[in-house]
Figure 1 (cartoon, rainbow, N blue to C red):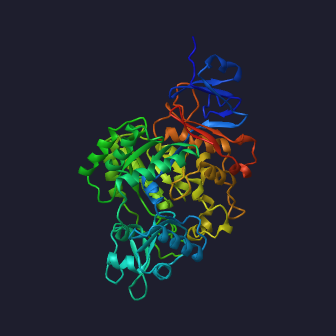
Figure 2 (cartoon, rainbow, N blue to C red):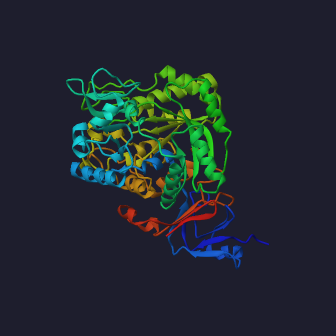
Figure 3 (cartoon, helix red, strand yellow):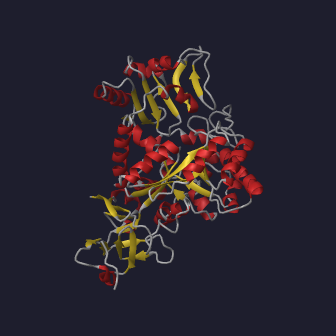
Length: 529
């Protein structure tokens, strides 16, 4: 007697991400597993009077999207501040911050997140908006912030003579006074003064944000910052059945991290829940191009004097990565510049020589620029690229500072998705939220339609099939879960998305017209339009 399903979706265009059975019409779910994938005429045997049957109406179904680069708790907490992602200019910023100030009269600080570069330069502008309360706003990429005079005074960094730790920069004028622009670790000198929300408020923001994330078809994320405290926050939500998102949490290795401190990563690795689990380590090798902190092979195009050192020397990175590798941890490393990518690949190669080669699936995150000599090294070393399409400026008309920093000579291998794919790499895709929107449709749109900045540049766009596979099957492989999820396949976890359209029938330029109408996580409908 056949299994009777809890839920059946039929008459759909199912893109399974399964190379052996790429398409199907119907699927059946029992509990938290997929029990049938196939033709409409064969799914009837799984129906019962209690089975919910949904007509897919020819629309696309995919595996649940796995966002391979995410900052879940940090992003959720930032949702409690002023949202500056859509701010277009100073007047817009003023209106947004003053509105937030009026709505949050009991908060000591006015803080915001998501502003683009070139909209504000420093404290004088923020003083015009709000002079009597400390103001701190963070750029969309999280690597530069701006503070008003009151906030700088409270931090004790307004006057000359104070330097930032590590790779941080307090931008100062000709008299040594802080302008209000803070880069990298200098940001902490102000942000550490802002009171953290209560545990109850964090929980409220996190649960609310997860609902919004589910509504975009995302069912799993690879978190990119973490420690045991954050891991236990997720684990507690899993225990109460409120974590409707699978979260892979690394231990954040910082330059000051010692071998003794890595014991916390080992403890996190022991947590292997269905929704919250450890097993990885995260490093930052450099900053970002926008703030002149990306580590490059050749100098910046618009400021040759800007020569960042990188956050780790090759020796320091190799030593710490070797310790993590010996513990069995998977390693993720933030690398925006081609110099950072090269240094990390050199480090991984040295680790393989010292520890021996294993199925480590170590990763390089972002890869905004790559030197052509380093492209084949990924497959040679078994290293995985993890990239975010919406980081790429869509066209030159956007006025983004990024192409100017990089310079035309590097444009051909900027966000080089096609080159990486043709070199034999399976790319894990994601958003880097809250740096960029978590909606996968936005990332699919950029991956499909990004314009060349120069007519002679190679076309780096990908097909819809390649992008979805990178967001599902290849993303699951990038977290050692390729036998559990990332495909619509019998026996796999029932993490599934039903869309409002047949994605494959749409003109690629119209992909944003499609939205999820149902998201299923672990066999449970967590979003239904």
